[in-house]
Length: 125
Image (cartoon, rainbow, N blue to C red; front, top):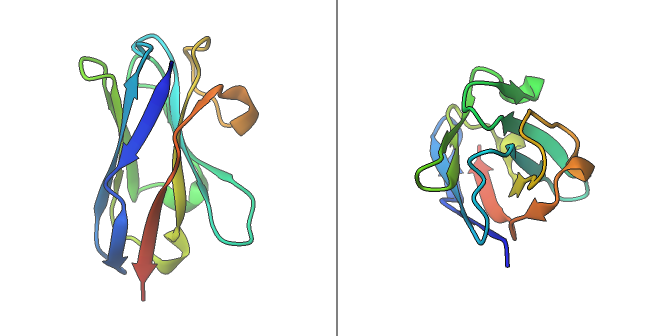
């Protein structure tokens, strides 16, 4: 059974930093794309960041560019999302996603076939 488990969320103040982790099991994602999405209350799930199998090719949504960094450690089968200068509008449930068949960057949720359960990030003003 392939699983993704997120950790590292919580309640922070505006301007603070957080690091989300997503540990995979049941499948080695070293040759596959990983990504992060988020969903705020009353809004649709949106793309945040994606990282290709090589760890070098990344894409970000415009609202997080320069503040968030996606990284991966293939030896640990884990992907990270470093979030700096957090804003209240970053408040959402953050989801880790992976594709077991694709190696390049993906920005559409429908292109991923494995999802984590989600973790809450709340940024107070």
